[in-house]
Image (tube, helix red, strand yellow):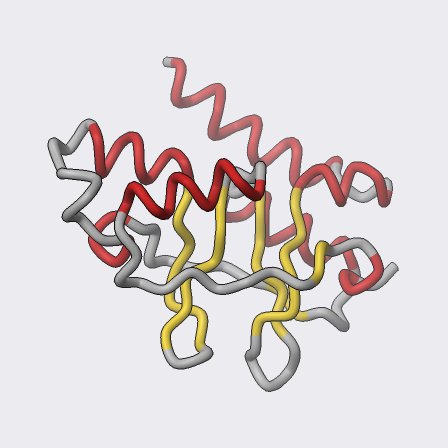
Length: 140
């Protein structure tokens, strides 16, 4: 099964100059935990609810003055829409992430694939093991 068959498409890029407060509002409105960040139609990072909480709020940053570029995750792992869904599971496991931006071969964002999408597709075992290792080690 290709990633394009299970991903969420129609995902908008958030601008890197968006304030942390506005980013949090967009996450709430979309009812998601992460959104891709782009500049000039290119993916430059991901902003997560955890980024806002840990790097923003806990880092004493003013949510009305700090911008996404200052607190986002800049290491972006991704997959291509024409790859097999098991490839997304491998990337998630290796990097211990729960969501991946999906790009076309021109490296333009076309969607996001989440761990829940892989569960529905029946290929989440490897990703779950990788993400679970991260969760278990964080508790120790």
